[in-house]
Length: 116
Image (cartoon, rainbow, N blue to C red):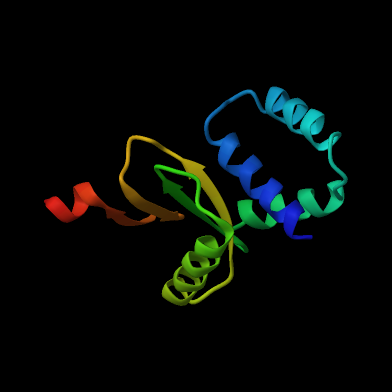
């Protein structure tokens, strides 16, 4: 189920970047064909995200984060927001540090923020 949640979360985030939902859906289906997932679970999770029943934590960093560090970050972010979240990670070489977005709230843990 966790794989389906991450796919639904990424689909939701990607849907904010494009108006062409049909193209986005087709790209997603092509990618899903490569792995075994439950489309119904993805759809249900997507709708829960859209209805704010489940929240996404988008974690941006300059480099890929290893699984051990991801677990530590996820534990701390869950404690901070006091709820379960679906975590999506993105690499953004423009930042140094971490940028954590949950809905409209942003935790800016980048060097630029600390220098200000």
